[in-house]
Amino acid sequence: MAKGDNSKLWSMFSVVAALGAAVVARKGIDKSWQVSTGKKPPENPADPDIEIWEAVAWATLTGAAVSLARMYAQRRAAAYYVKTTGKLPPTLRQDGE
Image (cartoon, rainbow, N blue to C red; front, side, top):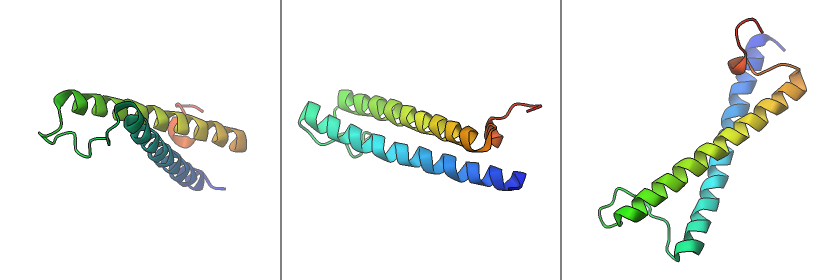
């Protein structure tokens, strides 16, 4: 496989892993919010009808959980890439590698 093909493959693999992780994390967060608060998660935290504590808690929780899930998925994708190709993905290589 040519170098350019590896780069494209990694880009697609990385994006799919990150998006999948974000979707799964968001569904888990939604369910956890409903169980813990007894209410549906805020659809739009910027809505003035949503209490400020709820908007801040929701934004903090979703931001952290989705970011962590995406990072974990991309790290797992990179590990799989290394396992199958024997080297780091093109975007993670340092100069001289």
